[in-house]
Length: 157
Length: 206
View 1: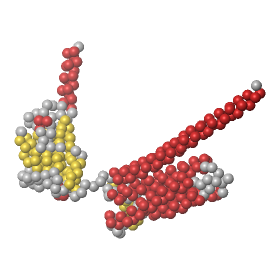
View 2: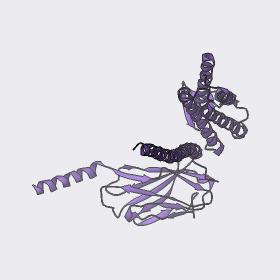
View 3: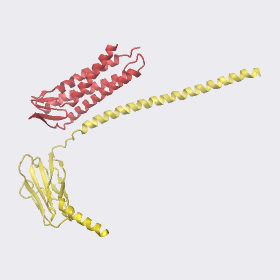
View 4: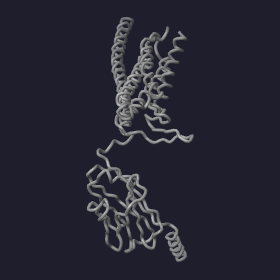
């Protein structure tokens, strides 16, 4: 049982780290030494970074909001999990934790989908996708699985 | 004593007007739609009284160009607008120099009007100062500022979350109160019943 608890916590923390990295780093798309989205458009030159803001497009702001919300909800879910670990009745399910984690997974899914659909229109199609984009898509199934585990998990007698 | 104070303040004011230069104020950036009119405001701060020889001059540098051209000059009570350059017949002086306002109105904007407008005001003898620039951005459609939609979505979702949690706890509190009042009336009936049976038992004993 302790092993399952440990594995669940590790999975949730991994989700949190992936969400934070994907939201905060500006590497959703790259083009040589230039990486951009979600927040800044940075070019590495002469040993330093020169950054300017990304476009003010409506869909990009929606993706920013959804990624931030997914991170916040996953964080809230983790805190609620730690609370419920001590306050839940024996045999009870971690319902609240699961709700927030599944909501976080839905938000990150929406954000990733909006970005995937709208992005090639805005920038050159030859630009590659950065690691932050990959992490965002990876975060979606991981958070969903984590949410389902919380639905199934019961507090042991 | 009072005369010393008055003398000191006059001297200080005199010194201040020597060391502080004229300060020109304009907006930082103006956004406007194609075909609309935009009013570029320019004002100044000076320790001297507004002189009748006050001058305003506007200078325009297009985006990407190295040099600019002068487009407006006000001197000696008369305004001279550009009648040869890109703003001919589109520029109008709408300021009030006696009120330190040197604003101009540009009509029927086009995309080629994107650039930096510099206002330079001089109020003799206060002439040492730095001109101030305003950037004009002409749009087909005014874009939403960065972060407005982001903030709105995050705010609405978190607000809904707090609202749902508050309603949940309110419901629990109300239901708990109703349950509480129900059990109170039950205890009351039971207590009266016990007292009644005790009295009946005590009666025959006496």
